[in-house]
Image 1: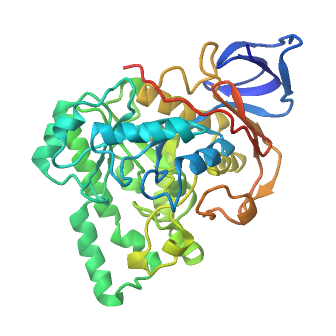
Image 2 (image 1 turned 180 degrees about the vertical axis):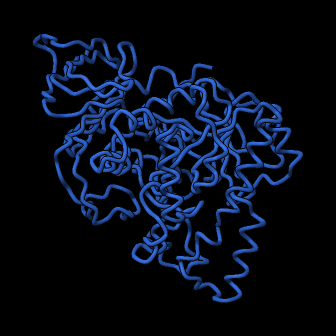
Image 3 (image 1 turned 135 degrees about the vertical axis):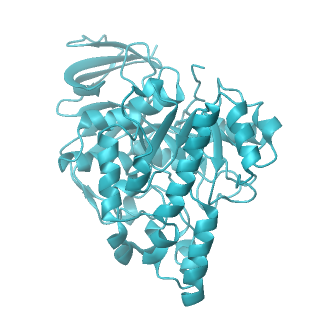
Length: 445
């Protein structure tokens, strides 16, 4: 039996911060108490002065595997994730081929079983014509259903209203949606393309993928969920206006309609396009400072339930294309937790709220089995953070396969020192344990 004792940590869990020892035995947290005496076979880590958090569960990533592996792989990005304190991820279906049949979905699970350093699950991708296949999805070992209601790749845009209603009416599984109105975006794009051609100024991106486009689509999806009783989760809110569609009057466990916000929409705003250019080109777009403030307000008052990354790397060469040809998305998993702790240091958000939105709530929302909390009997997915160690994001410490980060040049004033996945010390002060892999997430459904 493998035993690891973490001593003297400041544990952040379930809206409390308290000093305690914690014992890991094999995969699980076996004991949490003030003073634990180790035996001779126990590895002891003195965490005096450090924070101990549950491992982050990132409910939206694009790790590009299979088919787009010149940008990223499950191996490279899961390694970057654990360096960033993310111990579990849920990956999206828009790879090549797309995960729109059960066999193709299981192919991705097999890749992850062999290569992922973090725990993993995947979403099944809905289309206009695969309802029968969608309904075969196993709720106990698949995270959920993903629908693109705008900005799809391949044939994944679900724009047939009859099909949408059938999907919403036919499954009890959580349906996650990307909401942008395609007609509005096409109209806005044509107006700018007629003026500028391919070289549309990047600072017009948020006017092309506008507030109106987001709100029209989000409000429509929510209306359909209310009509059908579907369990709806709206990904990556980007506008203050959309936040008014969501409720904070009931506990998360009772909500049928929930929302997520991503790191980039909490960190950047429209003035950053001048410096960062297409490196912060995402769909939905980074919008105004007023929108960013509205997202923070909704996050802190619990209309928004989850913080995620929407990690979606592209090569620098791809990003350097003219606006019309530069892809949207960027890499974030290595730096997401540090970014939120930086906001804590600025007085914007508490540590307890960070843990709630990045660890507890994804576990509750997706009904992840025995993860997302620091509890006896739960998997030992844990992160140690030195809250007073400064470092700067540079090319030589970026772990993404694409080799760049929108945070390059940013100084963070906290450092992730240790990450445990299923009780194994996978990341230890810059060194990786590559002898073991993560596990498939299971769900209490």
